[in-house]
Amino acid sequence: MASRFQAPRGTQDILPELQPYWSAVHAAIADVTRLYGFQRIDTPVFESAALFEKGSGDTTDIVEKEMYRFEDRGGDQLALTPEGTPAICRAYLEHGMASWPQPVRLFTTHQMFRYDRPQKGRYRQHTQFDCEVFGSTDPLVDAEVISLLWMLYQRLGLTGLQVRIASLDDPEPRKAYLERLRAYYEPFRDRLSEDSQRRLDRNALRLLDSKDERDFPYKEAAPKLVNELSPAGAAHHEAVLDALSAAGIPAVVDPYLVRGLDYYNRTVFEVVPVDDERAQGTIGGGGRYDFLLETLGGTPTPAIGFGTGIERIVLEMQRRGVSFERESVADVFIVHRGEGSGRVAFRIASELRRENVPAQVGDGTRSFKAQFRSADASGARFAVILGESELERGIGLVKDLRGGGEQQEIPLELVAETVRGQSLAR
Image (tube, rainbow, N blue to C red; front, side, top):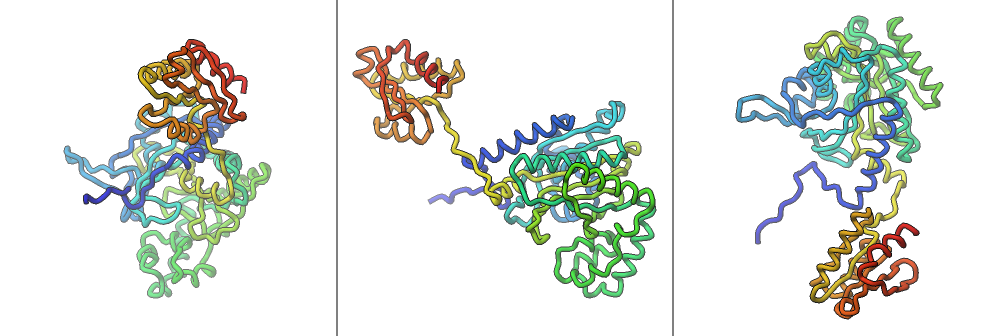
């Protein structure tokens, strides 16, 4: 017996029973982006691998361990998109959006690919909602981006959440802090996890958000950047916090919240469930990256954005008890059997669909009993019954499947009109 194929490890099928969650998320995204003045952009599913090496940092796990890289037949080094921000930045530069009225607000929903260790809520292929704002240093823009993400979660019924926020200051004042951080960790180098030992020289900030238990004893006493910001960085940070407070968005300063790349600066944030223990609970997050577009070959352009995985949102909706009633796949189910019944059934269904009434035609090779089981599973309100005796008399039987099973005899030429009227009346 031939082996059966399965979905690749780290991927999933979104089955019909989950589709209402996904529809709700996409509807909420469309709503909140409209309210905040964002425009949709879609970028290719693959890009030059070098874009992500520069845009994600060639020392990050994404590039070193997780990126799906391949060489095409022309010899180009390409990669499946592992995160959205570099691709949107590339589009901003390539299409001259710097000449548009600033700031430019863009969003996308995009398939992302990372060769990561699969676990609940984390897949090797996942769908991410990204928002990016280019061309403003205003701290109120930072607060608006966070506010949009917060509103999305609220509209989807996600309660018990909290914004964790910090500041990375600007690259120049951060240099002295990084030297102090390395000096603090150096005596403990041999006791740190392998990743932290490697990062100590190349990406020291990442030691503060290590999830390896071997690193925990040294984090609490480590110097915290958020406690020694430059005057400009501190003023920006306080303005963001004040705006979030004015909007009633609960935010706490998290000194362990960092990004490990030089072009990230000032605001960084995550949204997490309050009852989570900092394991894999982050639902979404982002930060300011005023120096990334310059790294990608553009002129200096301030920017801020976030990403949130839709699969992770759906899991949190289910965890919070958000549910949906089963949606019907048809308003009318046409049960038919016998010579000539298929043609009549198809004609009636076509008339109903032209009038925007969802209609499903039963399988005429199956018994009436089997077709009625399918009608019940479809959630249809009405059944139209076409048997040989009904066709001989020139009628169809219209049965109300949800209103006590009442049945009417209707001339064939009036079946579609009658069912449409009764469907609208309900």
